[in-house]
Image 1 (cartoon, rainbow, N blue to C red):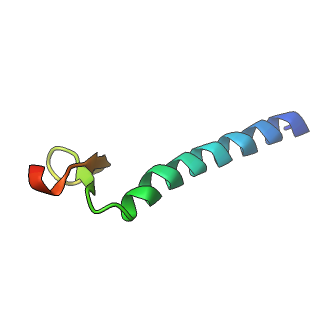
Image 2: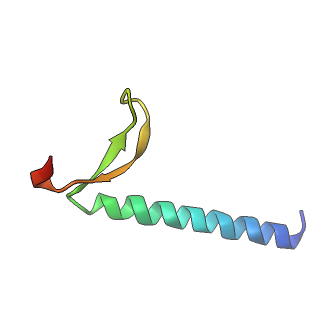
Image 3: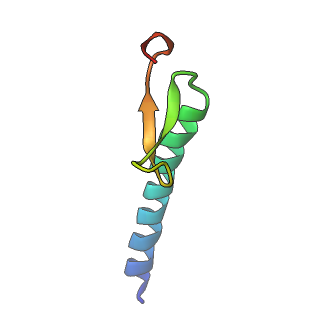
Amino acid sequence: MDLYTRLLLAVTALAVLGYIGLVYGSCAFDPDCHFRLCAGGRAFCGVDHVHVQDR
């Protein structure tokens, strides 16, 4: 691999990790944000933002 390819892979990896950290990290501090499970309850599908009175 040349230097340019390594640089692009590193930038892509940082962008993906930054996005995951932003979305899931900010959910940890929000009381209305909860982790959502897929059908069957075995797999993690994402986050759900529901107000307390809507639950």
